[in-house]
Amino acid sequence: MTLKVILDSNFLFIPAKFQIDVFEELAKLLNQRFEPVLLSSIYQELKTMAEKGAPSRRKQASLVLKLAEKCKLVNVEKFYNTERLRPHFHTFQMQPLFIMTSD
Image (cartoon, rainbow, N blue to C red):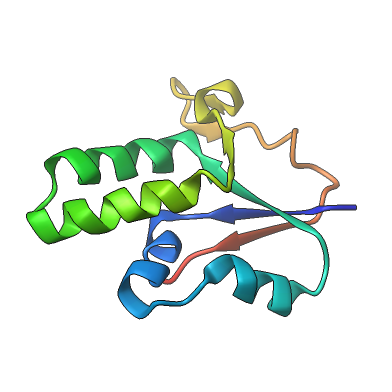
């Protein structure tokens, strides 16, 4: 079974800050097949940073968006009830899952 790994924006900025290939490091760490997942809300956050952030942040965010192309994009609105602010995680139930952040 392929492990789903949800990446947040801080985690995706690691390569831009420290010149580390996070996908290679995840492969070593997990030692199994994995699928990097990027939530649409994180993707939108990165796009906003790339368009409207401070100049140095825009450059980094543009690089991060290139890395994000390696991830499966998951539409949050499809699984999130914005009226009740409750996530619907039924699509990830019974599946191995990691959430990666640098916070």
